[in-house]
Length: 478
Image 1 (cartoon, rainbow, N blue to C red):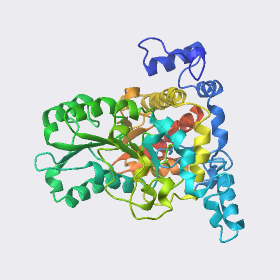
Image 2 (tube, rainbow, N blue to C red; image 1 turned 180 degrees about the vertical axis):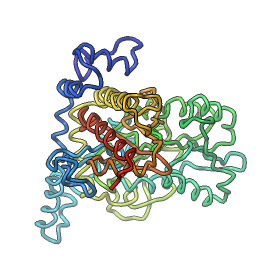
Image 3 (cartoon, helix red, strand yellow; image 1 turned 135 degrees about the horizontal axis):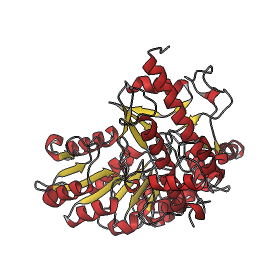
């Protein structure tokens, strides 16, 4: 049984488009009917999670035109790929720790070892669920720092270039912070980034890399590659890479294989331990809803604990049992916590706890089932109304989905390119209460998130885009 009940069980070899049409037909509806979105929401067994988040209203948005919307209706928030919504319990968790800090005598120092969440061990309160979300053992996870800092710490230990094996392989258009970190690590090790950093490009007239092309390149050039560092889900295109196949191929060639999972953790199911990923890191403020600047999480496979100890040390990497003896003789624990540098920030752990408490009420498998249908519904409506070959609206403006059509090769996000100026489209959507984001040179990222977005959100976005196109094509922009 899947999350929406027996009526929505997939038939063998059924595409998501065919599935949507079959479900609609069973209800005597069309996929494009407003009633169809209402029906899908009515049978969505995960819909109650939306009430566990603070959902913004139209009147909360800075650039909304209140002449075009109902000020008290929900905004159309489709930007969880950039910043997840705030869980309602965040304030309670933070207030509890602030209260503990305020009331403990001796300037609150006893908070380190007392209370429901002793500050010195606060990161340990989020290890189990974080590990479960990515298919890791608890000992393989550490919660610490921010994402790029963690990538530097990991590359300091795992990137060991030699004269013959020194290259780092990345996907096309890597996120700038990853790109800068890789370049600086190569320079730090005394090599030339222009020679050592290889960025794979997709085939001509294609937006995404083909898995077979990635595997072919690694198979043919692996002996010169020290590190394969890809994004699990590509931030620009939304492509979900084949992590197990790429990891296995790289390791077969003697490469270290690491992953930036910023857009994958909490978005798609992961099995990092089983896939034998060497290392990974991700942030927690996107799909994991821990707030802007939220803590990052690191994974190191247990097979690497002895071979790849931390290259950069800090006090909190010392084993807990003897840390306070302060002998200045480092003693690493035999787990991922050895990579920690400093005392974990308790106030940043609070929103992560609030979010993970929600994830504990479901599973990534259930969320993934909804996500596939939700994003397929978005894709269906976009192609129906705005596809280049569509004649429904008879509007000269159209858009193209550059995210892979195969639901196994994408997560929640769809990336859209437009025949009109994409910043003009973005401005019109903002006036209508749509929260999405734009990424240069020419993409809008639209992301219905499984844990709090509804099918009606997608339908409302579509209606807003229809209105935006009409406004742009009329030449009457305000």
